[in-house]
Image 1 (spheres, helix red, strand yellow):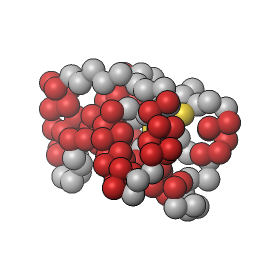
Image 2 (tube, one colour):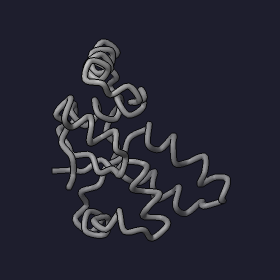
Image 3 (cartoon, helix red, strand yellow):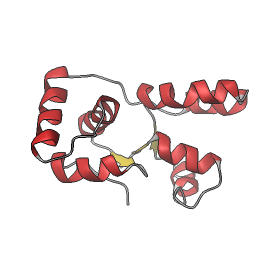
Image 4 (spheres, rainbow, N blue to C red):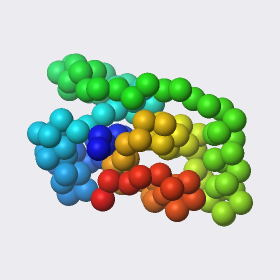
Length: 126
């Protein structure tokens, strides 16, 4: 199963952190995917740091198409609010929707995705 690598993992990986320890395996096995939301979060900072090679490599990763169903996003947000998860942002809900639509896992250090797993039953890479 493919794994959508969230921004938090990419940042940890670029910094050589321990939270992204599975990245080498996922890259070697060609299991990683990305989407436009995650690219939009990563690319501006990388441009400021003039990391042109890294940007080119990120653009070569297979992308999940974004087919945003706004009614479903509203329902996701409603479920979150009813369960007491008030701080989940729309970008995280879009990423969660994207993983469900494409039947993949999400690899993230973001605590919101652990909450979304409980509320929306998204598939986490663990």
